[in-house]
Image 1 (cartoon, rainbow, N blue to C red):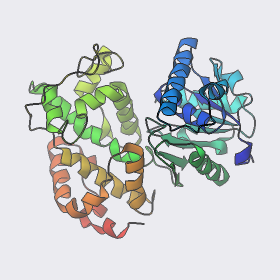
Image 2 (tube, helix red, strand yellow):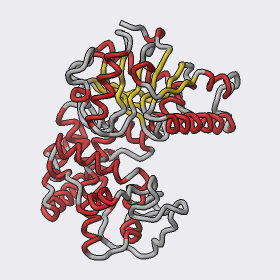
Image 3 (cartoon, rainbow, N blue to C red):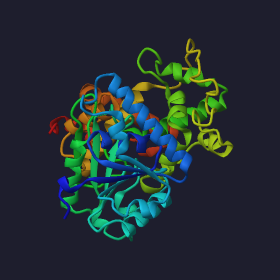
Image 4 (cartoon, helix red, strand yellow):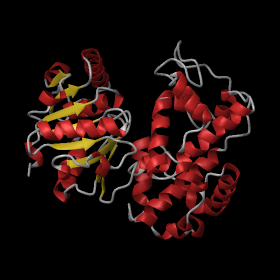
Length: 396
């Protein structure tokens, strides 16, 4: 088994936002990096963005003085040939599009062409590691390591084993996670021994899309402007973006694909609604394409948030998160709610649901009962642990 100190060459498959971030902090940690994607332009743009990011960190005094940008970038190579790029890889991060067939193909190619000691870590946000690693060589060397954007700023990585992942690989990846720097402080590398689609944070966040997708459809059917939905969320007062603008910013396809994944894995209630499906069919994916809920062609849209629709209730988001956190406790994914709140704080810069949930669980349970009845989405019904309040005794 490879020792942590023997890891020198890291390949990152996928030169998008997440791949760039993972590669950047890996360079900062002293590793030699190879960035891999489908074509030269994508890879080149990714490398340029990494260099710009390092310069920005340097200008803020957040990079060690003895580290020069040129020296760091000398350790960064690029490739469009996955098979040859992983020939000497000690470790591979997979950060490609959230489509199972693509991730499985990447996993298969990597494990067939890399050294026998090589470990592959998937940054999947929704899929089970066991499914990604199914029927590939050395499935015991495949694991999940989920980072948060921007990777250099958000000081958390969730490390989760699949059914076949060895304990030795889990141990090593937790340590590797701790070695990757974060400019805000020490990185929290969370050990998750029982598999759960979405790890911890996305397991809490993605069920909110059931509610927001339903809200989008209600607004569309009643000719309510999207800005009024974002006004409901308290944009500028409580949150930087409302659900419509945030979905555009993250990518409508990201939300859609996550919901389709959960629809298949967890419940039919995650099926995307009419509005999200319409955007996907039209190819309007939000900021990345210039159009979605809003027009992004001239930059960040200037929203009129003076009028509220009275349709979207931000408190329901917190109730859904508390319910999902209680399900993680019921399933034994985590032993206490403290780590859930820590992951949310370090990974998303949002408070976890349990602090407020301890005071509000009875009211929030009623909200979810009513919501499940109105929407027909029974997945949103509060679980027994939430309704009883017994989670309060499960801090650690």
